[in-house]
Image (tube, rainbow, N blue to C red):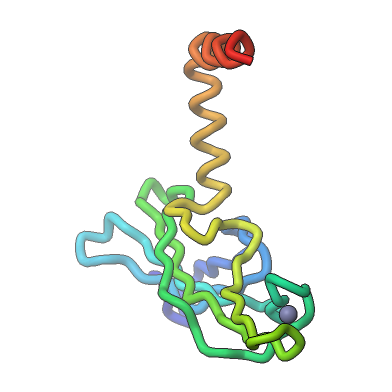
Length: 140
Ligand SMILES: [Zn+2]
């Protein structure tokens, strides 16, 4: 069903709500309780973290596995290997690991999932959250 060119279901980056990527591969684990979706960046350039200029490709970073919003009631993992670039303008040729808008460098979750969980948390514990906000305010 997943990942085969003949499959009728085509999972796209738009469907996932992830920007600047394309889907490479969709697979399930043996128990089929988890879906892993491998994506790669479609951005043209990796911009230097220091000067903001486009960098030259400089290999790949460590593979990230980020939990995403569940699909079909299954745990869904987004897999991405961040690209690295090396700047020709900055002294010492500083390297930059590409980060896209929908995850943090050290995050375990995608931002759409984070926002979803936060939304649920706020809805279920509005009173609790506002009490904590009050505490913070009185602390100032
Ligand atoms: Zn630079």
